[in-house]
Length: 154
Image 1: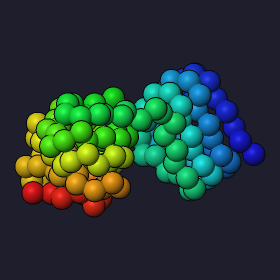
Image 2 (image 1 turned 135 degrees about the horizontal axis):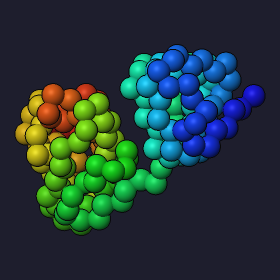
Image 3 (image 1 turned 45 degrees about the vertical axis):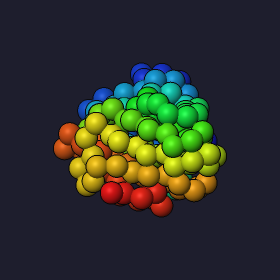
Image 4 (image 1 turned 180 degrees about the vertical axis):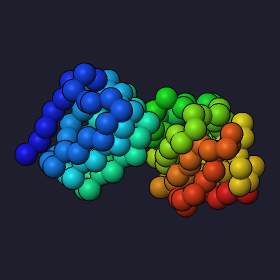
């Protein structure tokens, strides 16, 4: 069974909500209590919960990935960025929001792409030099932190 909800009014703000099925959120949603979904959770619009989020199966972020070709800024509005290098490219990343996750993957290797975030808590640069190189980042304590991937953290 899949429950689909459009907009924010279906949630009981401030109370824990448990859904014993898959859940698809198709409109903007905000909730201040814990949200537990025993199946898969798919969100295709902005969904905010200030309580604990528990997903028993698959968490899907339905969003268009940024494709960055050449040097430039990795955006902080999309969860995933595909990097297409066109030479030795300098990449930047502005500060995000507390708890924000960012995934960056090299899609096409035309040279090394070196990412220099505004604030990187566990290094100063991240280099992508092969197709498939990736960086999994979280923004916390006023800095991005790389906690997974195959790109080179320096």
